Image (cartoon, rainbow, N blue to C red; front, top):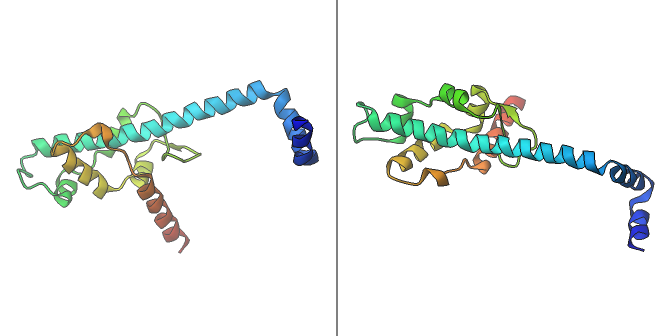
Length: 157
C-alpha cells in the first residue's frame, strides 16, 4: 500500500527513475560511496594543509632573529611569508575542497591562495606560538566562502 502511494506521488518519470535505481542500486551506491570517500579525503587534505602552514610559519617565527619578541600579524607576513610551495609538496592528496564543497580543485598554489586568508594564517600562527592547541585549528568555511564571493564579484565587475 505504501509502495503504490509512493509510486502515485512520483508520477511517470519518478517511477522510471525509481525502477532504474532499484535495478542498479549496487553500482549507484558504490559510485556514491567512492565519491563520498574522495570528497572526505579532499576536505581533510584542506585541514592538513592549513595546520601544516600554521606549524611551518610558527617554526619560522620562533627561530627568526628578525622577529625577536615583537611578533605581530603584519611582521609575520612580511618577514616570514607563507610557505605555499612546501604545503603543496607535502600534501598527501592531490585535491582539496572547502568543507561543504561538492567539486574538488587541484592542489595548486593558486587554489591554496584562493582558499586561505594570509591574515587568518598569521593570527593562528601567533596563537600557536602562545600555546593554543593546533589540532583544534580549522579553516573557516564562512571566510573562504566570503573570499570566493568577493573574487567572483571582482571578476564580474
